[in-house]
Length: 217
Ligand SMILES: N[C@@H](CCC(=O)N[C@@H](CS)C(=O)NCC(=O)O)C(=O)O
Image (cartoon, rainbow, N blue to C red; front, top):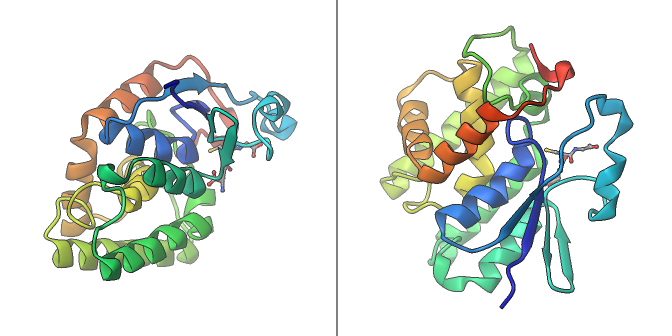
């Protein structure tokens, strides 16, 4: 059986790409990776992405005749194709809550995403953040604290799953911008950054030669 291809962009910057990539790696699901670099001038909007992506954005998973875009839809597709991987909690109640949290992440936290773009190799240091970002951080910390208390960790619903994949780039943002110093953040970040796929992605990000100046601050 041929492997699907996951199209991603620069590992240093592409937060949406990290989500399906880390989920598939953690679960040992085979795929080919095709990294397409962002345009140096972001206003050019990466026309080369159009060759494989209906929206001109990444990530995109191509599995035979099927093309799936949108990170959460890709994760759902992978979960359906690999039910034994346990990408969602087994119990319907926990699964419903996990889905609600994953959708909240997918649709929300625009202020955090806009003001604190993912930049994995940035030297850790704080920056001035707006009250809207503080609100996003409070909400995320609440979700992490409540989920870890309920599941006992180390991930939000016990074992690593889609919810954790959705929050992986947030862990990086918290680290490099020194956001949310608290027990639940330290505990969850340690679990995430201890994963071998996390370390591999970060190493690759640090070695990339490309710089997008507009998100370097
Ligand atoms: N909601 C989409 C967001 C995808 C997205 O914005 N991807 C960024 C890279 S992290 C992108 O391709 N940006 C290029 C552009 O906007 O031209 C998803 O979940 O996959």
